[in-house]
Image (cartoon, rainbow, N blue to C red; front, side, top):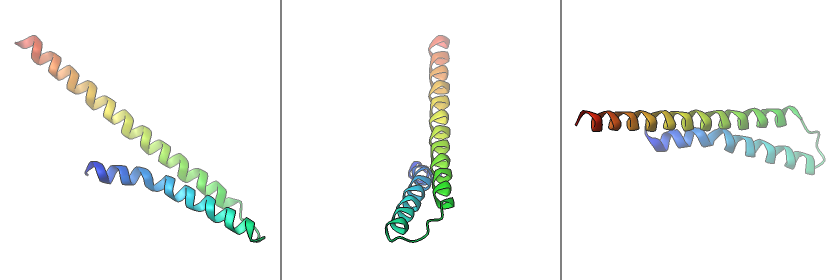
Amino acid sequence: MGRSSVLLLIGLPWVTAVAVVLMVTKIHSFGGRVHWGLLGSACICFSIGCLARTSVGLHDMAQRAQRERASGNDRQAS
């Protein structure tokens, strides 16, 4: 999976959260009955986006540390 695909997957939950919040706001402004469960759904989408971003960040840190260890071992062997 390419880097751009990963970034798209990370961004989708946040886009969905914003869309749901805007939908709740629009329903409320027209005086309609607001389904507050939609706001809960937006919060869930936002938390999924945060979890995805954190997971990718931790993966990047682990990969960087592994490369640094590998390059340190190469220098010691020389």
